[in-house]
Length: 249
Figure 1 (tube, rainbow, N blue to C red):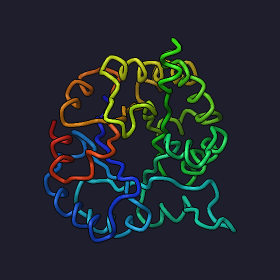
Figure 2 (figure 1 turned 30 degrees about the horizontal axis):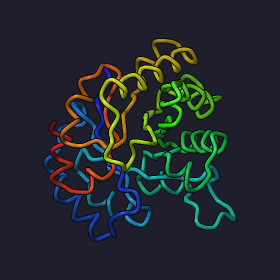
Figure 3 (figure 1 turned 60 degrees about the vertical axis):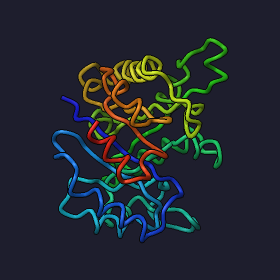
Figure 4 (figure 1 turned 120 degrees about the horizontal axis):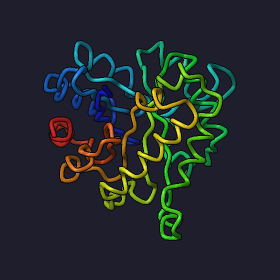
C-alpha cells in the first residue's frame, strides 16, 4: 500500500526566521507518517534550522536541489553527502525551473539521482510535458523519454527509494492546473514506463506525485485518482494554514 505524500516546495521564499516559525506552527497538527507523509523543501540556508524545529514531529525536511559530487571545487553547489549528514533525507531533482533557468539536462539529473541515492537521500524526480507538445497532439508521451533518461541505470533496489513527480511546466506557477484526468494520465504513463523498466511489482510500489498549481480547491479531485499518490505543492505551501488544509484534505 503506497502511503500518500503532501510535499511543499518553497523555492526561493522565506528566510531562516520565517521558515522556523512555519515549522513550529504546523508540526503538532500533522497526521502520523504511516497515514500520510508530510514534507517541506526549503532554501538551503534554512534547512538545518528547519530540521531542528521539526524534531519529534512527522514532518520531513527536504532539499530543493543538490550536486552530483560530494565535494570539490564547485562553487555555490550543495553536497548530497553534507545534506545527509545535516539530517536531510529527501531532495527534489529535475524540477522544471532547474531545467529551464539553469539548463539542467536529463544526463545531469541522472547523475544527481545516482549521487543522492549513494548518499542515502531519497530523490523526488520531476518530469514534465509542455503545453506546446500537448497542443500539438503529443499529449504527455514526452514524459516517457524523461523517465527513461532520468532513471537510467538504477537498480531495482534503488528505484524503490525514488519518488516521481509529474509536473507539467505549463501548470507551474500559472494558476492553470492540469485537470484531474490530465494529471492522472501523466502519472499512469509514468507508472507504466517504470513497469516496462523494472516490472509491475516495483512500479506498483513507486509513489508518483502531481505538481502544478495545486490548491485547496483541486486537491481532493487529484488525490481521488488511483495513480496519484500525493502532490508537490508550490505557492499553496507557503502559508501554514493553507498547508494544513492540504494535508487534511
